[in-house]
Structures are given as structure tokens and as C-alpha cells.
Amino acid sequence: MKKFLKSFLALGLLAGATASAAELTVYSHRHYDSDAVLFKQFTEETGIKVNVVKGSADQLIQRLASEGKNSPADVLLTVDAGRLHQAKAAGVLQPVKSKALAKNVPASMRDPEGHWYGMTVRSR
Image (cartoon, rainbow, N blue to C red; front, side, top):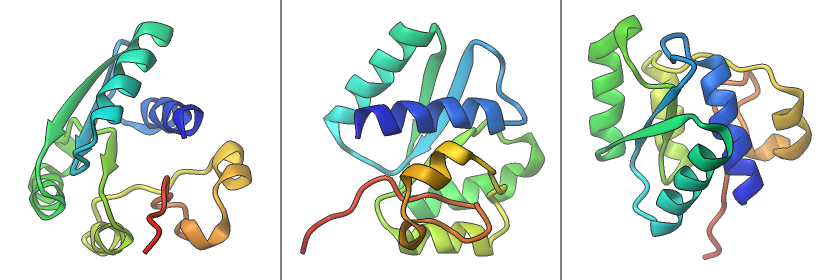
């Protein structure tokens, strides 16, 4: 998980149209302490600062829609696939082509057009 999230953040930097070389902006609905640890490690290893904007997935999707092409967001993290489908339907995600993601994320956990990739699953 740690390597994948770091790779995902790096991919966000590469894919983000508004990202500067020294910063990555993550819009996150996730509330896990482990994320802060991973963001810190990512910054220490890459020198890239991670700015985290927190909110509910619905708030963040609405924010992305209202910001449009001027959004500073590079990565959107949610806690469920339903919100990822909603974000895609709202047109706030851009597709990403990545051999690393295609290799490491099963087809059942990603959008066929590359708009989103699942990082974790919950057992129920």
C-alpha cells in the first residue's frame, strides 16, 4: 500500500496540469492517520510538498466542478468507488495512462478509460 500510494502521488504530480515541480495538491475525503505519514514520507523522499485539502467527497467533487480548469487539485482521494463514478460523471477527472497502474491495479478496481484507480478495498 505504501509504495502504491507514493507511486499514485507521483503520478498525480505528472498528470496534474497545475502542479508545480515542488508541490502536489491532494483533495482527500480519507481520514486515516496513515495518509499523513505517507504524505510526509513522500515529501522526505522526493522533496515535493503535499498540500492536503480535506472535505467530504461530495464537497470536493463540487469544488472541483466549480474550480474547473483552474483547480489546484492533482489527486482526488475518496473512500468509496461510488464517489469515483460520480466524479467521472461530473467531468472533473482526467484520464491517466500509466503502465505501472495498469500492471498493479486489477481491472476490476479501475475505470476502463483511466479516469480513476482504486487503491484499497475493505472487507465486509
